[in-house]
Each structure stands twice: as C-alpha cells, then as structure tokens.
Image (cartoon, rainbow, N blue to C red; front, side, top):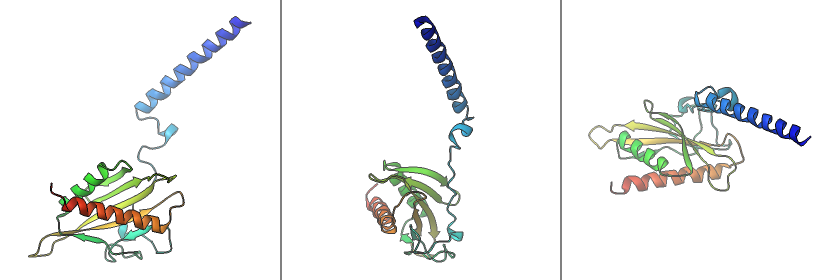
Length: 181
C-alpha cells in the first residue's frame, strides 16, 4: 500500500514539474498572454485633447484649456523656463529615481508619459499622465509646460489625494530643475 502511494506521489510530482517547465518556457517565449494577460496592460493612453473630465470626478487635472478643450481642469498647467528636452530629462530622472513610481507608457514623439505610483497605505496604484508642451517665446528664453492628470482606475483615492500627489510631483521637478547638474 505504501509503495503504491509513493509511486503515485512520484508520478504526480514528475507531471507537475513537467507542466511547470512547459508553462515557464511558454511565458519566456512571449506566448504567455493567454495565461497572464498582455505585458503592456489594458489601460488606455490618456488623450488630453479629447479628455472628458469634470471637477466632480475623482482625479485631478492640471492643464491649460487650449490643451484640454473637452475638460474642465482643476488647475492650469505648470510652465517652466527650460527647454522641452531638459524638462523631459528632469521628469524621467525624477520618475526613475523614485521607487514608488513605475513607467507604464512612454511616447517620446508626442512627449507624453504615463506612470503608476503606489504610495504606502494605498491598495492600488494611481495613474499619472504627463504631457510636455513646448512654447517658444520668440526673443525670450524657451519655455515648456506640463499637463498632468492623476486618476485611479481602481480603489478609493480622493481628489484631494490626487491634488497632493501632483503638487508633490511639481515641487520635486522644480527642485530638480533648480539644483546644479
């Protein structure tokens, strides 16, 4: 009786190991989307020009009306007296060096970036969409501005929480821009 049980347990273990190796190889060869879902996820990219946002929705939008014509922004976008390239480098440096932030999507051509940030105590991460806009000012120094949108596809993060998040991001970016390289 004990020999039959050992033989059964050994056979079941070998089958489980073979199935595990097969699943691992399938995932490594990028065929695991049917098991685990797509690598890039299913959150759509934020289209600032078509964003339908009002102040009563949970989230926070910092955007100029010309950039977000379909939305009612909570606050205007933030302008900096630097080039778009320097602002982009500073943004990427900030997000890469902050352990709570993960890059979700980067569109270098349109200067739009989507990040997720999960702060301690939050069950689910929030999504922060950032668009960098350049506004050459003729004879004056080149300026760039940010349009930022923070929202949570899941969970119960409130608009004041999103506002505090975006204000922290702006403070950190300003501090990095003002620090010597």
